[in-house]
Image: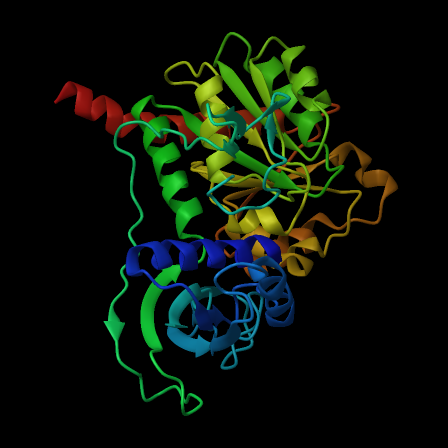
Amino acid sequence: MHEMSLAEGVLQLIEDAAREQEFAKVTTVWLEIGQLSGVEVEAMKFCFDAVTRDSIADGARLEIIALPGTGWCMECSMSVPMAEVFGECPQCGGHRMQVTGGTEMRVKELEVA
Amino acid sequence: MCTTCGCGEGEVKIDGVDAHHEHEHVHADGTRHSHGHDHEHGAGATHEHVHAHQHSYAPAHSHAPGVGNRRMVQIEQDILAKNNAYAAQNRQRLAASGIFALNLVSSPGSGKTTLLVKTIGMLKGRQRVAVIEGDQQTSQDAERIRATGAPAIQINTGKGCHLDAHMVGHAMGKLELPEDSLLMIENVGNLVCPAAFDLGEAHKVVILSVTEGEDKPIKYPDMFRAAKLMLMNKCDLLPYVSFSVPRAIEFARRVNPAIEVIEVSATTGAGMEAWLEWIGRGAAELARPRLERAGS
């Protein structure tokens, strides 16, 4: 969803950091993307390349750190892995699940020159 | 440029006027340059800080040998951090005036604007309502709202697929929002992108009309997970369509076990009182801490 907006958000964080940290070139960007965040990684890479053209991150490598989805099953009262936001509990097969992890969309770190 | 998220950058218009004002200067020596203005965001504005700590090469990452003065900069920032900071400002401004704000989201054609017009009509004399309308183009929806007598402002997102907190903050500044009123924000018709963008509202309300598929909650789970209430609209058409209300509710609760559901028809008025009561309860919850503060 809206990977173009997110890619522009990433570029803004990079440009803010460049002003504070005084670097002129970004060579690698690490993003943490949760499995349940709704971000399509291939679309993100495509949009990142498009929005960073002629910026300080032009040509930078985008590395995605995938974070697993987890949920709390209200029936089992336990934390279980979740592949989709409407996934079923692998223990009881129920759907009374609250997402507890895997919705992250973060810029983790940069390699700069 | 829009510093929130960049979506539809340079094309956002609020009531037909560019949201960001570029202008050009000609200097005495004949050089020209143009620049945009940054906007003030009022007292108590939150500032974003990038916490960047330098460190030498992290051994966890492998790098090509022979690269000289490269270094690592830690960012650890949410991609939506800027939008979220603007949303927090909007929420603070709304809370200070006791304004209950709802973000109405749905696919195009679910009947959001008709529902709003009906809601405003029924609230006349009971509660003051102002509306922020979001569409890619035209101010037709804002005109429909103004015809009811309620103040409305139109945001055109251009190519953008959703409203963001920065645009809404500007629109709030242009609308006269009376204390203890209701602010309805009609988002761009889109069941995907608006889910991720907090505008500073109290709650998201998702509208699903019975002429759509009953499985939309699991096809577009993010939106139904983000919503507090699902309004099932156009219920007067149930005899003519193969839409199962219980199945739609089951699908919605699969992605959001806590979601509340009200069946309505903006055309016949069925269920509208239950919706108004829901608004009334939410507004009262918002007012309580304020009154307690004032009384103490």
